[in-house]
Amino acid sequence: MSADEPAVLRVATLADGLRVEVRPLRLEDREEIAHGFEGLSERTRYLRFLTLKGELSERGLENLVDRVDQHDHVAVALWWPRRSTDDVLLGEGRFIRLRSDPETADVAVTVADEIQGLGAGTLLMSVLADRAREEGVRCFTAVMSGENEPSHRMMMRVGRVVRDVLSEGVREIDVELPPVESQEGA
Image 1 (tube, rainbow, N blue to C red):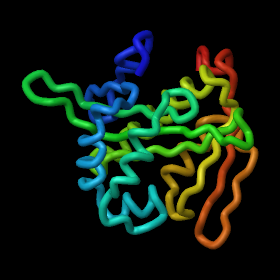
Image 2: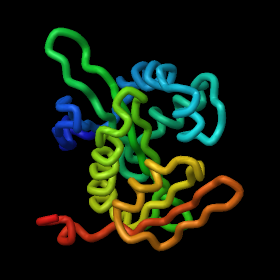
Image 3: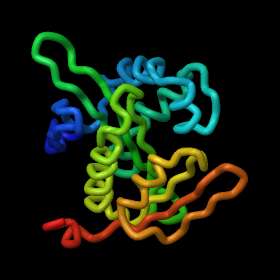
């Protein structure tokens, strides 16, 4: 995180009334990311990674945390801010710019099982879309399980769907991000 980057990108309230903050992911969050992964159900891990990952490897942590530059690889974390104890990580989202097309980025969001369905994924995706536009990204692409209807609906709300293909249980979707002006008043 650069000195001019805000510590909190957005404060929001989830559908159950829980107040949360979205912040840029930092190297100091590495342990919390590993711990958060361990807390995900097998189903959530499968839907997010398309495999039954048992644990997050050192290489996986490097990819998820150490290689984040907040420009070509932007990552944000969803936190439950606490006064009396450490803040609790509830989810994370990221986009990684494609080398072959710098205006397109692969996007992914992971939310703790306990708060799925409360708007946390949509909140993370909204913050990522804002950051993407700031970085010159115009399109999100994602690969997900064909069973992952919540993620599919979330992607469809981000912008105009330009490609949506389901083949052999895997869905590939490309969404054009609307310009900032289209978001105002919406």
